[in-house]
Every structure is written in C-alpha cells, then in structure tokens.
Length: 420
Image (tube, rainbow, N blue to C red):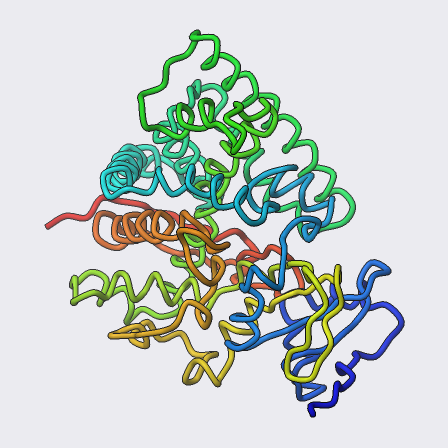
C-alpha cells in the first residue's frame, strides 16, 4: 500500500514578494533548492502547488484532474485575458469555443497572414530608411497591429494604429505587474473591449461586413452550446484573444534580433537559407528567451500523484520557463543553439512555450503555428531584405520583470535595403 507523503514546502509564510523579485526564476529556484519537481507555497494568501518537468506537464494537462475555471487571477483577467474567455472554460464548453479558434488556422488562412506580414514589412523599409533611430519592439507592435486587424477583418484607421498597438502592448505588459503598469494594462483592456464591442455590434446589425471566414465575422456569429450568440462583451474578449497574441509576437521578434546580434553566426545561416534553419532558429527563440513564466489550473477533485495529495480547488502552477531550461529535457539548455531542433522529436509535454497537450481539443494555444509562421516571415525579412546596425545600448534582459524585454527594447539604426 502506497503511503501519502507531504509535498515539500518552500520557506516563508507567503512568497508573493519573492515571486515579484525573482520573476521567471521563482519556481526553478525552489525546485533546485528543495531538489524536487513539486513543492507547495503560499501566494497572495492562498495555498499553491508549483510543478515542473515532463511528467508534471502531462499531469497538468489532464482535464480529468484539472480545470481552468477560476485559475487566472482577476488581475490577469482584467489585463491579459479578459473575463469569460476561452482560457477559463472547461469540458464541452471549452472544446466548442476552441473550435472557433481552430477554424481560423487553416493552411489558407495561415498563408494569408504570412502574406500580409511580408507586405507590411515591405512598406516599413522606406519609413525606417529615413529614421535615425528605431525602437524595434515599438515599431513591430505597430506593424503587427496592422497585420492582425487586416487579417481578422477589423477596421483600423491609420490615425488610430499607434493607440491600438500601445493598448495591446499594455494589456500584455500589465498582467505580471503591480502599481502603474497594472493600472495601465487595465485601462488598455477597457478601451480595447469598448472598441471591439462596437465592431461586434456593427457586424450583427449589418453595418459592417468583414469578409467571410475572418476572425471578426466568425466571432460575431459564433453560437454557444445552447445555440445562442455570445454576449457582445464575451465576443469582444474572444476577438481580442485573436488580435492581442498576434501583436505580442513583437516580443519574440525583438528577442530574435537580440539573438542575431549576440550570435552573428546565426545571421549567416539565416541568410544562406540553410535547410530548415529559419524554423529551427524560431523554435530556439521560443525555448531560450523568457516569455510565459508559468501557467495555472485548479485541481478538479482530490487525487494522489507520486504519493502526493492534491486537494480539490488548489491552484497549481506549471513552470514553463523552467521546463524550457531543464537539462533533463535539453542538452546544455542555457546555450542558444537552434541546431538542437534539427530532427527534433519531442512530446506535447516537454516543449510548451504556448501550452501543452492536444492543440485541437486541449489547452495548447490554437495560434501556435500562426506565431511560428509570422516569426519566420519577420525574421527572414530582417536578415534577408534589409541591413541595419545595432548601436550601443542596454541589451540586458531582466528575469525579475514579467513580462520582460531587452532593457532598451532593441534599438536599431542605419536601416537600408539589401543590394545584390
């Protein structure tokens, strides 16, 4: 008979301040210190179990044992996700809503967003050639805001592009913060939802007719399991859950340019078109650089795993950043080596930068391949269509800040079109 054992506990009455100060390393630090893949702690005055490793990920994505409802704190819902969106659904309701997102990820639709991305980058060259200094992250947010809205069928006036791009950025930037950054994220979420609610209402009234098959058209007309249209606010949240992540790819692009600067040999391979190197490079950016720190779920019902007791309702965090740097999964994980993805054959539970498990039915991000394709198109452009210089700047990346970026947001200058 297996005996239940106590889950190791981290030191301290409440580790919330430690989480704020350690950021991406919070779970990893304690797993190493306690020599365990599972430990318990208290965060924001509630008991929390933290986990890492492939086996833990496979457990975490077992829908018989975990639910997403109530897992995301209100502060995250009020900035990043919105309320009553797909991320907080379970069971049949989640699978039905997920179909809305998956229906947008056809090969034809993915080709469409790649074409739009390339076109927007092409339009950027002349503007950049005339600028002395480009804060890459900010400009790429603007580029991808245009791409996202055009692809989704959402009208976007030129005069409002910067404002909408900034709001998308602040929604992401505010989710892991306290104080002014969080307040800015809440304000951005409110403005964005009001904007998109108006778009949904116009579509339903026939005042706006986005092309069939676009995200705006599909979301406005999507019906729930009871064959009812989504509430306007919920439909707006879901449409933003399509637009916002596309704009957030700017973070990966900034990290990509950081990697190209730090590893010039990668630029040469990107330019040579060597095999599948572009995709390998993109995958290594998603693994190596800090983006998602962890993901959360709640225990559906009491169960025992590895003799540890998991009690109904307990919040559980899975360490995404730590798994992306786990030497049991990756050889020399703290080295940037795109070649590791040459003929890489992983499971749905050991490489989870955008969630794990089954993409079609589970909680792995429906837009994962969209992200990869937009990154590939963007980084191919930045290495093969233009040249630029990287001036002296602060390129450090703080792991205590969630989410994080290169300190100076990746500045470039002297942009010029490549000549044959």
